[in-house]
Length: 251
Image (cartoon, rainbow, N blue to C red):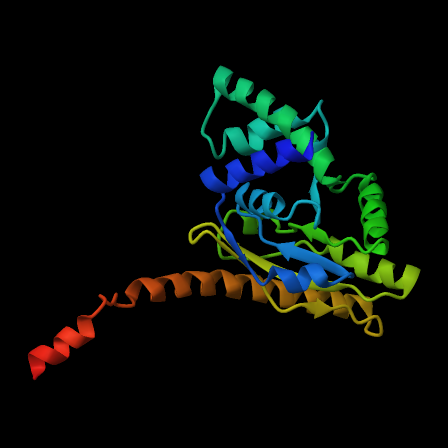
């Protein structure tokens, strides 16, 4: 897939599907030891971030979407039926079409396949560590299954935090994790205050500290984005010259 084709597709996604503004991303992109950790929100979170940050972040994705043999079935089960509500023949055909495009997109984005609990998960970490050692920032969506079903709740699987320990052991570089809140309702994304791995703290304690910071930050920013939009809507609009006319009547 050429860069021109991807750029066109990304623009179409932004106009018709995503159209989300990203706040505070530049600080994270300047960090050469960074992992961005975001909530999922179905397909919205990954599509919003990956279409906006082409070749600036290297995303973790479920391994099925990188395989022509497995992608169509996964897309049908996880996207076409769940979000598009298409079933039977129409659902299968749409899934096949999206699946072909998706696999090429993942290859173009240099997405990192995640193999879950299988033995092949070692490949995921090996590729990720190579990216980090080359100073390429990662994008990860580690919400657990319960959290994915409840917008505003953020509960993270913590296996990805091991990258910090391994990066420090291999290169003495300290990894920084940036929380990212994606809110589909207000079409906005916000990057929060980072948390740095402390190699001098026992790993279990450090993993819990990082997890709690990320969960608290993502959930807080998610609510804050909605509160800010509600405040803007409550703010009275001012007509040009309205104040002057009011003073004139009072006089």
